[in-house]
Every structure is written in C-alpha cells, then in structure tokens.
Length: 106
Image (cartoon, rainbow, N blue to C red; front, side, top):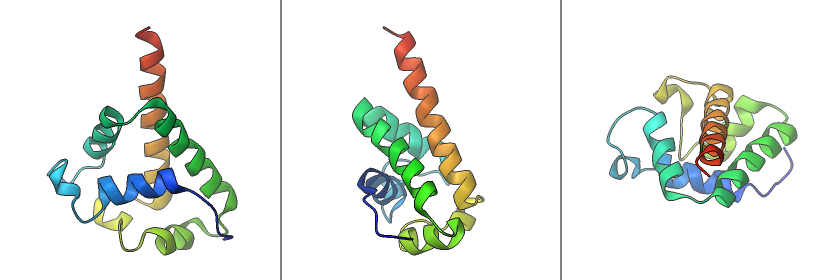
C-alpha cells in the first residue's frame, strides 16, 4: 500500500482503541468506544473518518496485511472477535447511522 494520509482514522484507533481505551469505556466491546467517539466528536471529524476508511479500502493491496501493518501496535482485530473488514464496516455503519439520526433532529 502506498503511503496515504488517514489521520482521522489513525486518531480514532489510537484514542479509542489504544492502550488506554479502558479509560473511556472499560468493556471489551467495540460499539461503546465508537459511541464515545460519536458523542465527543463533531460532524466534520466523523465524515473524515468515513473518508479515511474509504481511502484505506481503496488503496490497500491486502486488507488484512495492511490493517495489521498500520495498527499492529493499537488494535488486533482477533482480540476483539472481529476482522479488519468487519471492524471497518462496523465503524463506517455506526457513524453513518449517527449522522443520519442527527439530520432528523433538526
């Protein structure tokens, strides 16, 4: 994979799934960490994470290997009962649902 700028996704991974993830939510579940991100972040950052996921998926040569290369020190999907593809799909879907719900609040 070529070097790409996916800083919003990188920040999400480091802050919400890094070594101190349990300070935000002490469960071993993925969804509460994403809920914490959604509660603390603004629409622009949420859209940036979606864009970064799309770019990562477009640019990677081997999703499993590239995900591990980028996030091996932060997030091991198997430890969370998932795969890189399922994890990225979940993050993308939860952000989109949140954004869609916020549109209906206006």
